[in-house]
Amino acid sequence: EELLIDFHEIISEHSGANLTKVVWSTLELYRLKNQVMAVVCDNASNNDTLLQALGEKCANEGINFSHEDSHIHCLLHIVHLA
Image (tube, rainbow, N blue to C red; front, side, top):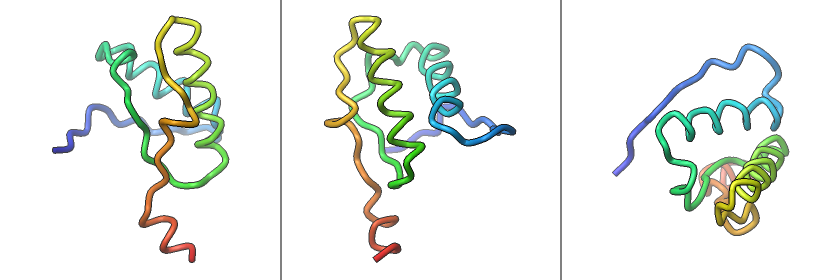
């Protein structure tokens, strides 16, 4: 089952740093910081940066989150690119 918990329009650049700010604020708002198991996203480099930054934020708060193990690449994006 899926549930959209938040939606933000990002006016500025869609950089990993800007995405991290938005995602982290949503995780804080809904008290989900320590409940993230994985993130599904496409292969864009800004998503790599996002997940690395989330990993750093989690580490700073003592939350177990590995950006390498938790990054699930979207199969539909991969197939479309092939």
